[in-house]
Image (tube, rainbow, N blue to C red; front, side, top):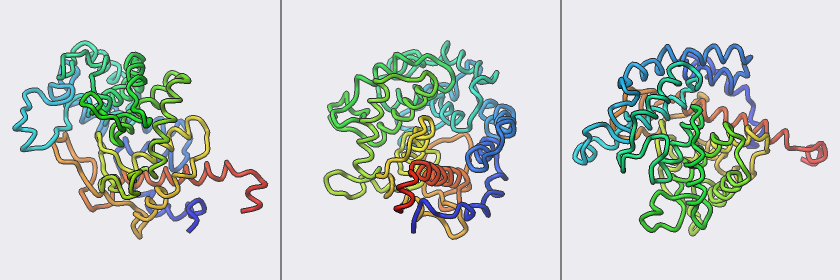
Length: 342
């Protein structure tokens, strides 16, 4: 099957199902799948602050701007709690990531208030560092850059730190301070997402683009999921559709990053993404939707999917917009001469 020629009409039966969703998801369907006029999807996006999941998260916010009393972990959460419940996903850093995924308008009143209060009150549990100055782990700092850049915070100092923390093979690993000298899929994708958000906000620099290039090469050389040494999947979960991703790497997340970077700069997809695209296509259900393979263990504010093994609107949205990008950009990159030879 020629993936770039897959009929787009095959997605039409699921569009109504996608639109029958929270505004946080619906506006992205309108923009990314339906190519709705800007005024229409922007009006829908504006509802995230006051309706549905976005409004629910703000109703759960602490008076000081944080969530669940902490930056990375809830107030009073113990190691025993962690072992019994798993990693909690309710504190500030994870809630901000979810609001960014929902597409909360960064200039809305709730966003501006939250950014200010977090700057005044939130401190990282590691050593009391002010929230917007970052922590010590690259994966945490990648997410902090992504959130800060998205919500209009100056996170240049964290970016500078990350640029100096690359591994020799091109990516990042939050175990660097413990002696690691090789990159991690999980950490690398978090930093890449932060850097592309920073470039969107500031224009970036030659240094940030070079750092992204080497990190992208780290993933591309591995077909986004393989061990370089054996060619086998580096981790079974890398092939699973996980939502929300949190800090976990997977092929869908990596493809969505490459889509974002390609669209930002108008560049053609790297042909080495082909195996990952083929794998994504193979996971589509007969009815045109994609399933949710795994929900990460741990405390959440509320569910945004119907459960493991069930068709997922979030996974389906991401898969469809990746395939749409792949087809469009691939076609745009063909010259008349190369098209004639194909």
